[in-house]
Image (cartoon, rainbow, N blue to C red; front, side):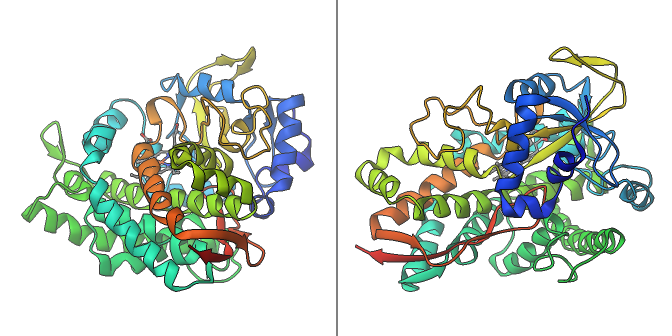
Length: 423
Ligand code: HEM
């Protein structure tokens, strides 16, 4: 079955994601009438849209059949593919990171960082993260009665946390923020490399220049951590050996880049979106103030609500079947986490923000072999921020209209103006 052109266009349109509702409406129809069907938006290779929660799990449970790295791991224009392959020497993804690896290489590389991000290992970081949270809360309170919660808190706090975990010095944070935003926001003239509207070739060239800056920076860091190893994540990456060999240059760079980028933009977007939801729901805020034990449920629902990673792509290595639908070897597939987190078959009132979902089966961290490596860190740092902030606040409301980033990949609110009173 083919998805009608207008719906196919909407679910890839960065501006539709910035608007919010059009994408949710399109997926509502797709889930109901054509839950596993082909989209062929202008300028893109056709792909299956996997819109239901259950079907995404089915695909993600079979990583040997549905590969991450044979084609682009995220939506891209047909004309970009040969350019990317030219730049990388034949690979379909500019960055060779965990999300674009399969099989044994993926297992080996994932194992490098995995032990340091388990809930048990993270307990040792709780005090350091709380200190960081207190700093940002104090800065926000000093701005009373108004601030842009996205730019003043939500973008900066997760950045400081992840850079501390990775071992990047504080003075380099603005540089890392700029480069990671450029990497994810090439369609947004406010955040991309050239700070203007760009065509696809210019966007790719911007991404290439950003990558060069990142590689230069991380090259120096590798030398530093090999000379003086620490227990920070970038040192684990720099010193990791698989079959007796250090990771090669593309593996190293891909690892640093995914840890640095996936490690804060996602959490920043979720934190900003959570505050937006709260500022519009005074009763919810009362509930959270009255029962601080509900903060975990608030974090979980915020992740479902914002879905900062809108999709990842897979491709079939062989003919296969999902929910009775035949998929051919080589077919490209979009796993829409945005859609799955609004799936009526799994969530009551999916378009309502509710902290009483038990369990909350949100799938915004993905599932299976590639499930988000940073999920426990993300939950923990958001919980700590709210625990530190809520006791100081009496009321919160919007002080203007929030705005979302123009992107169809990793995105969320980029401005959340709020007015607040203190206890
Ligand atoms: C992978 C979402 C925070 C590091 C992923 C995936 C998603 C995701 C959807 C792909 C999963 C799949 O293919 O099944 C999120 C969300 C976050 C978040 C919603 C915050 C709310 C973080 C943080 C870190 C991180 C804080 C850093 C420590 C990674 C890495 C991968 C990944 C390294 C690749 C894993 C692999 O392919 O094996 N994340 N993420 N993420 N995430 Fe996160």
